[in-house]
Length: 238
Ligand SMILES: [Zn+2]
Image 1 (tube, helix red, strand yellow):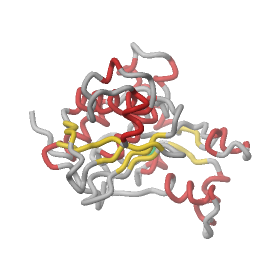
Image 2 (tube, protein in one colour):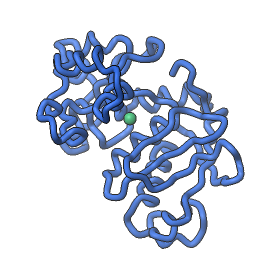
Image 3 (spheres, protein in one colour):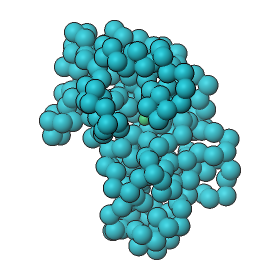
């Protein structure tokens, strides 16, 4: 989280692109009564914000006027900016994307980087050689290189928490949907013995969820460690 700004006191202003609210059949401009809305991006966003509030205590406050208000908009990809920026905080949601992906992007907004980009990640996973090769060689910006540069280098200061293969912010070993033209993306890393050990320890917290949620790269739920980091980073008290 080096260089990333926190949301002071854990209060995050947000507003919606009007088209998303219309699509949802929302009466107002905020998340009130979202559970009764039509399925879609706005409903997913409100559900994700409610979930982060439940697990971490951060609050999302409707406020379109503030310069740092998070705009929730439709996009060609699903993305989120990192932490609080003085202006231009944004979550874009691709129509049809899963709820777990939206929950993940709000993790970025709350200051979380990808777990697999931690500086100590090599102790817990082994990236496939084609990917380490791309990491070293990507000098010009093809779409693949842009992705590799953004989502795979080690970044940030060493976290004080244990490496968390159960994190919502960890990628799945199979990233094939990102680059369907290249079969190698179907397997981009293997957990080391140490990584497997951590997974065994953390997966119990999702015992009540389907099996796909108890593996590395789950996009089901916020892990305990994710919630703790968000609380600490944003100074949520109580
Ligand atoms: Zn991400």
